[in-house]
Image 1: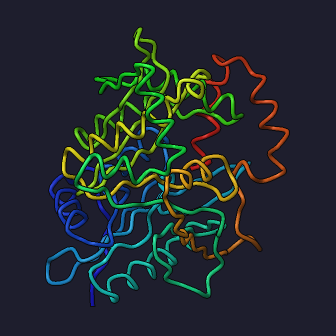
Image 2: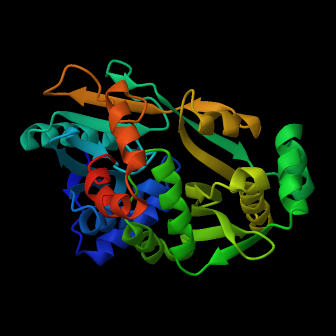
Length: 345
């Protein structure tokens, strides 16, 4: 039987072993990497419990968890806040079961209202689940022209429009231009922005596996930007921001095409368009790019609540808050937002 341990944030040697396992395990994702423990603790001040199983001195499973406590949004143990994927990644079922058993025991010891596991594949059909989210993943063809032709005609025309407008794509050294576009974008949608230091911490933590691509006009004005993750042979555009002028310039389509084109040149195999809520504009945009939605399996163990929490903008009870947030001055929203969003995850 495997034995269960916790990753000590100060134990660099075990963290390296953890990451070696993650890169080799087919069920693992970018969000299983050990670096997320430091981010959860230092940026968001969340208590972390990164569990791993060992058999014969070898790591054979991991389960990253963080505890989120909020008067407004509840008390939970989540794998993993701010991640679209999580849950157990293991080589075999005994390790997976042992990790999940320890997570349930931990959740009850901590007195949380629920345990949430965000998975690509279902594991517990009898657990309550959240069916709101889907993901969009598609192979990248080895030929640039083949990737362009795979984009449906209407969106391909938008890509060509951006090219004709003289848009340019640049890899940024920092996060300044990205954050300005991102923060303005989420403010217009009525949601709090994550702190700028979080994005810089992502770049510092994951190095070349995290970059920022910014699109500018021919005159050099930033109009669209995306922060992406790289894992094995995949690219994951994860956080994005656009100026109001981006729609007219087709900068959003140009941005994602440029990211795909560069991924193709690197020999990457999968373009992961990420999570969207069903029935939203981002869901429709990704469908229009020829990507098919794949259900995400967010499974819950409920301890002190009767139903799966709905801490998302689709919840009608947050409608007034969203409208009020849009009216805040951007500087005020950027100052206040990190104190709120840290508990959303």
